Image (tube, rainbow, N blue to C red; front, top):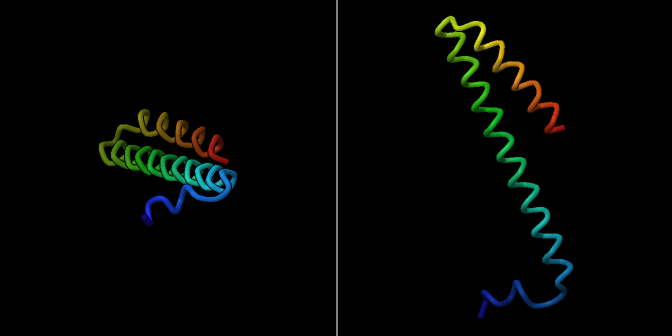
Length: 68
């Protein structure tokens, strides 16, 4: 009975909730992608792979620009 509660009432409220959820999911995905790139940069620096680190930093900058 309680599961049906979400689907009662105006569909417009449900649509807004879905849009907010999708937006939050995109933000979380972007955060993890940036975190992964930052980790790869640090690994490359630790292994003294400076060219790879530079390429990854450039990609991270692009991702950050796209995210904002």
